[in-house]
Amino acid sequence: MVRKTVEVDDELWEKMEEKAVKKFGLHGAIKKAIKEALEEWVKIK
Image (tube, rainbow, N blue to C red):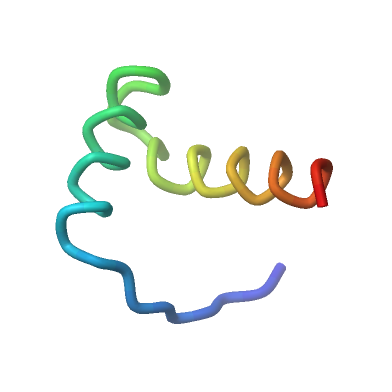
């Protein structure tokens, strides 16, 4: 497991956070959403 720090536009982060909580619930939503997004991005590239 690796830990990285990135900068994300505030507005983009807020939109992602809201959708992540709706989809995954409060516990671990951000981690799950980012993992899902990265997996999808890698698949299509």
